[in-house]
Length: 122
Image (cartoon, one colour):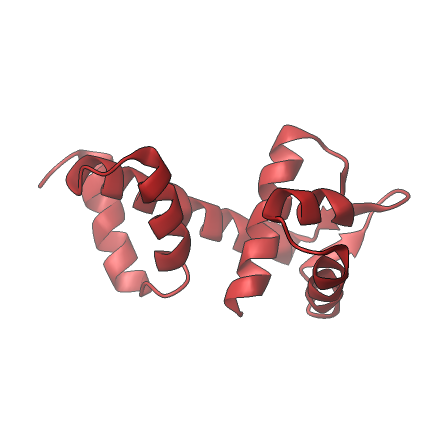
């Protein structure tokens, strides 16, 4: 999955946590992207089975989409906590860098970081 698709999925997931009715325009507003870009990205996610149409113009995550979004969101949260705690950077910087790292980190390295963050060890 490409970084852009992961960002769309994660954003849809976060917006659904805040409000059950999420539309493409909400995703565009949240990310600061054009509606056309988001529409194209969502079309890809639908084609790949991650997102489906809900009621009206609402978007819904499929089971596959929810699984992937939760995985991406978990990476983001763990990396943010790691950077705040161990790199001692501001939340703003931690969030920004976590968003970049979450797309390229290996599963093995992520599991190791997650273990240390959850145990509070280092």
